[in-house]
Amino acid sequence: MKAIRIHGRGGPDHLVYEDAPQPHPGPGEVLVRIHATGVIATELQWDETYQTATGSPRTLPIPGRDLSGVVEEIGQGVTTFAPGAEVYAMLGYGRDGAEADYTIALPDELAPKPHALDHVQAAAVPLSALTAWLALFEHARLEAGQTALIHGGAGGVGVFAVQLARWAGAQVIATASARNRDFLHELGASVVIDYSAERFEEVVHHIDVVFDLVGGETLARSWQVLKPGGVLVSVVSPQPPADVTKGHDARFAWFIVEPNRELLIQIGALIDAGQLRPIIDAVFPLSQARQAYEQGTKGHMRGKIVLRVAD
Ligand SMILES: NC(=O)c1ccc[n+]([C@@H]2O[C@H](COP(=O)([O-])OP(=O)(O)OC[C@H]3O[C@@H](n4cnc5c(N)ncnc54)[C@H](OP(=O)(O)O)[C@@H]3O)[C@@H](O)[C@H]2O)c1
Image (cartoon, rainbow, N blue to C red; front, top):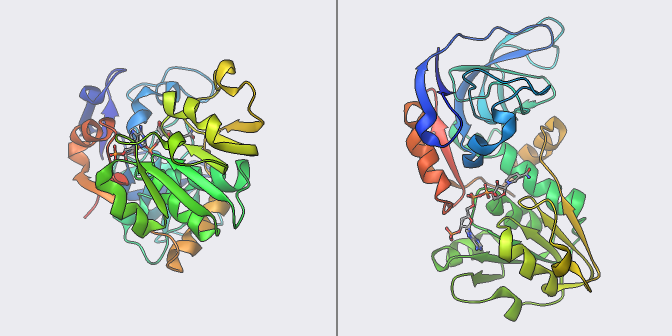
C-alpha cells in the first residue's frame, strides 16, 4: 500500500510518500480502508509519534490520528462492525496512523461516519471535536447562560468549541484575527476580538469559562478576565505559572484527548441534526502530506487541513 512514513524526528521534510506493508487485523482489530485523514501539525513533535505505548522506539512510523473510511476486514471477535461499514475515528497514540491506504483501528475507537458528511468532511472531525467537547463539558462543565471565551476560535479545535458552546446555550466570545471576524459570528460567537488589534482583557470581564488554544502570554493574561469560581481549560500548557494564578479564585484544567467512540457517536448525531459542522481550510492528496504539514505548522488555518487518500 502507499503511506506517509516519517524518516526522522523533526519537521515535514522527514515525511516520505512510499510503499509500506499493508497491515492485517489481529484478534479484536479492524482493518480500515482510509478515504481521508485530518492533519494534526503538532503530531510530528509528540514523543508518542516516535515510540510505542510501552516506550520502545518505532521504525518509520505512519502519522495520522483522524480517519474516515470503510471497514475492509475484521479480526476474530469483532462484532461491532462488518466489512463495508462507513466509519470515522480518532486512533490512539503510539502506533501507526491513517496516512496510508489502510490502517488498523480498535472497535472502541470507531464510530459510524455521520451520514451528512462525505469522507473528507468527516476526517476533519474526530480529534478536534472530541477536544472541544471534553474541554467545555467535562473539564469546564459549561452551562447554558454562562459566558465562554475561546482563544484561537477559528482554528481546528476552535471552530468546534465555538459551535458547541453556542449549542449549549452559552454566550460565546472568541479571539481570532480580523479576517475571521464574520466567519466566527456566523458560527455562533456574539463577540469576536481581533487579537492583533485589541487586548482581550481590556474588552471582556467576568467570564465563566476560558478555553485556551493558544498558550503562552494569552493563557497568562486570561486569569484576570475570569469571574471568581471560573474555570480556565488549556490544551496547550499543562501548568500555569504560579505568579500569574496568584490571587485569582479560579480553577485550572489541562488534559490530553483520547479516543472516545461513545462521544463520537454523540458528535455525529449533532452533525446529522445540523447543529455542528466541520470547517475545512484545505484538502491535499496524500502524496502531498509534506506541503499540508508545512501549511499547518504556520498556525493560521481556518478549521482543518485534510488529506484525501482514496477518490
Ligand atoms: N492537549 C490536547 O489533547 C490537544 C488536542 C488538540 C489540540 N491541542 C493543541 O491546541 C492548540 C490548538 O490546536 P488547533 O488544532 O486548533 O490549532 P490550529 O488549527 O493550528 O489553530 C490555528 C488558529 O489559531 C489562531 N491563533 C493564532 N494565534 C492566536 C492568538 N494569539 N490569539 C487567538 N488566536 C490565535 C489562528 O487564527 P488566525 O489565522 O486568525 O491568526 C488560527 O485560526 C495546538 O497547540 C494543539 O497542539 C491539544
